[in-house]
Length: 248
Length: 276
Image (tube, rainbow over all chains, first blue to last red; front, side, top):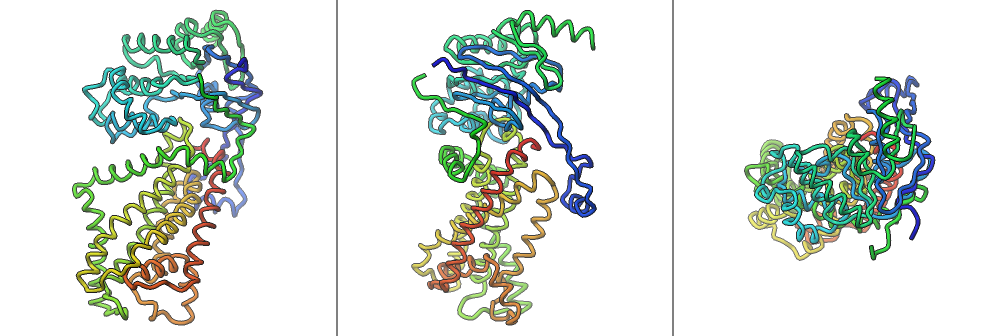
């Protein structure tokens, strides 16, 4: 099959902002009666098109607020596109935020099962995988500790370990790899390389430009929701670096 | 990759009810897990654990019993007053707890729903089913009271799942509408509480239907909760079948309410998720 795993065409993502924010229903009713309700569209992403082939690592760079995370959420099916079209062929393992699916009251073991199930795996299957996942994350001795007492690094290891435990078709990584210590960074990179070699496509959002230039096959630079440049990693990252240092 | 790829195409992302139901079925493992989590977290957090579910209705009933049986001297022909009270408060509690939990489900799980793709309805159904499970647990104290007061337990108790499942469906339907509104306005959940309180007074939980003046009777009977209560009481201690129209009301209101809830919720989801 030669079809790209991700096809994004003319994508736009709009957030609706009500101009005079009515946070309560009572206020809203009063405003509606006075006819003061109006909505404004804020485009977080607009006019973005790209493909990601099987086994390709696609990097996305850009300043804060460029729309990178919104774009990731659309690829991960969380947000629907406001315009344009997105086609994703295969299972996506989203790592959009660390511990997004974790319930801090539950233990590491319970969270592994819950998070894996949220990602669409079966609970029975997750139960079999728990020890392997804990082992990779180097958290075996904390298996029955509530996650609320975990450090950021421990959360990162646990989340990464669950998300990459089953080989997905597409791995969406949003600024997760830069958390954690040296050894975690090395091991997570090794695991991503392993997945890439096995034909998994990776979409990587990161502010660590060195990392992106190193492991991406192609890079897109975004600003204000629009793509500024797509192409060979070295060239795009260099252009973005020059732009950042001149304008900021 | 031997299995065929699951394809997501945003242009075909319309979600009619059939797709919703299929999604729900695919995520049934998650549903089971969420219900279990809901119950364990609830019991872990309270010192009394599962005893709380048994004690809570009994305490409520004790207070109401003193007020209405000893002070106001209410009496319901043919049934010990505590049994009448407890059976009524349990049904209203299921509805109140279910609607509140379902209504808050999206807001409470925003951190998951805005980061991982999960059919959001799963969380609503999990809340409703958890409320139903709590109800089932709290049937035990009711049975005990029935035995103590000599009301007995008729064979029709085996039919209780029918009104309970219908009530859970009805509750989830109402809850889904509230869940959608609560994403927009945070005070919706407070207003819901007030609304539920008002509705619960319109159901004969602690007063006998016979004391209701003729001209208000309609107001009480038009409330679907009245029919749920009537059918449930018939099964749990009377050992009788409520009139046919009550059965019609519970089935129709459950199906219609759930349908409306799922339909409205799934259609508005794409506007909701950006606000989470």
